[in-house]
Length: 327
Ligand code: AMP
Ligand code: TRP
Image (cartoon, rainbow, N blue to C red; front, side):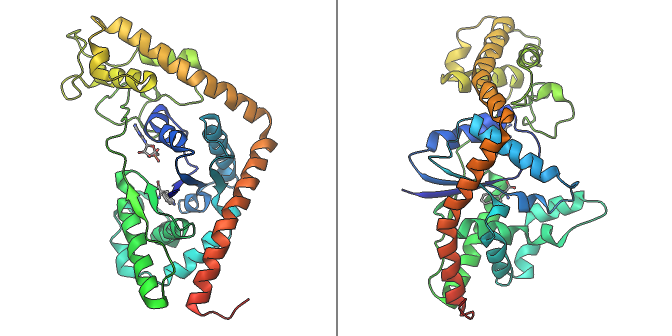
């Protein structure tokens, strides 16, 4: 089976866009691929946080992912800092990546320009830790958004350089960018992507939101005044977004759904109902997981153990090929 690796930062709450655009694909691919999902808490350290915040969010994210259907029995779900090999290989790769290469990373330019008083060195070397995440698992495919393509390309470059200097060591990974996966737009500003950093929360549906409130947000979604239900994202972004969400929840095409509606009211009511039906079982599972945090901790410990079974021999191979003194 193809080895797939993806990393998710434990920052911000998971919203409907994350669920329909990413998490659901991971859930659906279980069993067809050998998937490793890593909550990258060490990456989250690159931007200053309060003590305890990352740990708390790590547990929450694990609970949300499991509640959404990621099955720790069928995938490897673990926390980056629980597997020391990430930090160790990260250092080795830093020493095999040039300052110039890292200076070209657009995410660094972007994120560092938004940090006012403290740009950590870790923010600069972030992509070498990401390369370590990927290469430690002999990863073949990395499902990511377009914004991460450059980091996966860098990972390939570093792996190739290492292989040619020290002999065949790493599998060369490739980025897999899902073809225009369900893109959920903000309910109030339907030309912007639904995002955790939106200006108002009226346009964003968080997975943990109260369901009555969720239904209300959908019924109050921004549409337009011509009152014609038609799938046309450019001319009618609000209505098309509702059709897209309804389609993603029900497995039907938005174009086909549009034919069934004359007015916005019933479309909003049906979309609200479909989203509530999608979220209800997720929330009830989330409630159980929150009531027993030790269960998630146990699952994550099991995940780290499975991860180490892959990562330890790979790092041994690296150390051996580098020619460090054997331990
Ligand atoms: P982010 O929340 O930006 O870290 O993204 C995490 C994952 O969710 C990535 O795979 C994104 O492509 C996906 N994602 C984020 N926002 C949306 C959205 N509004 N619609 C669809 N997918 C999204
Ligand atoms: N940099 C990724 C992001 O910001 C998160 C990430 C860290 C990752 N390590 C990874 C993604 C390894 C894929 C593979 O979204």
